Length: 188
Image (cartoon, rainbow, N blue to C red; front, side, top):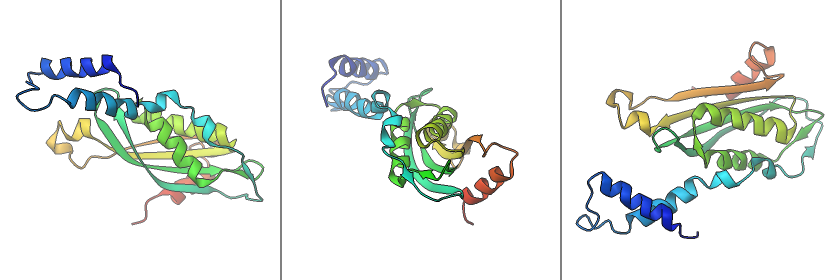
């Protein structure tokens, strides 16, 4: 990864502004590490999730398909701290067209490697699946822990945030929506 001198200098200024003496604390290389890490954390900004789907697979599939427990980590845009969890996806194929399962994880990874809000991430995943696979309906459930919440509030240590997005035949209030939720629900 190319060095970003401006980001390195800014990270150093930020740490010093917080009162850290980088030399005394033996943190002279930390600004460089921070710049490199955040370049990776935000690398999804230069990638298009539409590019991951490849050729769709033609099948006779007429039922719901679920991809569960895709693990992700992202950076909350409010505090620049990590949040992480799992993504559950259910979709109803249109004309039997499906995508290989690994493509779903690739799309989630690209969208998570951006400064994010969980609500937006959920909507973006739903839109990426709906358009990339050309589904008749999509339901996405994202469950995550946010360090910006748990590190700043001891009472929130076990808090999980759950967000959903749905479209097409899997919109809220339909029988298929309820069936998809049941399919994605965690087993007790």
